[in-house]
Amino acid sequence: GEDVEQSLFLSVREGDSSVINCTYTDSSSTYLYWYKQEPGAGLQLLTYIFSNMDMKQDQRLTVLLNKKDKHLSLRIADTQTGDSAIYFCAEFPSNTGKLIFGQGTTLQVKP
Amino acid sequence: DAGVTQSPTHLIKTRGQHVTLRCSPISGHKSVSWYQQVLGQGPQFIFQYYEKEERGRGNFPDRFSARQFPNYSSELNVNALLLGDSALYLCASSLVGSTDTQYFGPGTRLTVL
Image (cartoon, rainbow over all chains, first blue to last red; front, top):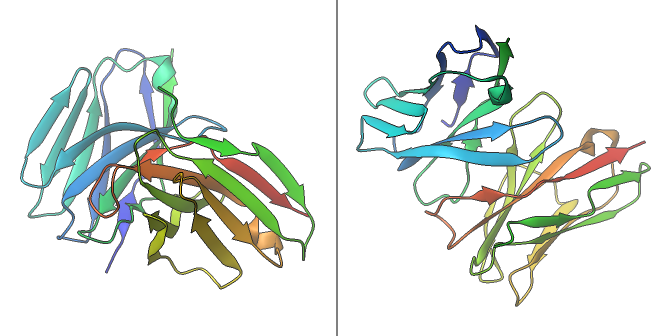
């Protein structure tokens, strides 16, 4: 089946690290994605990881993939107030052309 | 370079009416996908078009239809609107259809009264 699960809410203090977790079900997914959505806006691609990788680092963002457990995480280092948004994890089942999204994690960053 | 553009930004309709939403992909991209995002949820896949042909369809009723034009822009049409069609409609473009990263536009906020 196709299902992506995320925790709904995370609150951190400015300067701390944030870790957003996600589980997915489709083992054929070649890529896994993280998108960011600010209020009233569309989705901004943050980063993605190829399914044969364990980790990918991109400036303040680190993505970890445990393919055996179908678990994906996004770590944001030195979290800033501008990082406050909803973060969506998405799987991309092979040859379907469609992204399957989780319900989104709202990240609240307190000053 | 311009990103994905969508029009209109906001739209208010009444039940039973129909609506047409428009999307222009990133220059050079040949595939357009449509998603519906109901408030508080993640986006749900509606359609994907590549080279003017439908390549995928989500679990939406026949009231939803779409097409892609020779310049790769796309329209999403929804007939006989229901209150439950109120949502943010997102368009995403990619180079080709089934394997490439999708880049999203700002969306069209549809309110059905």
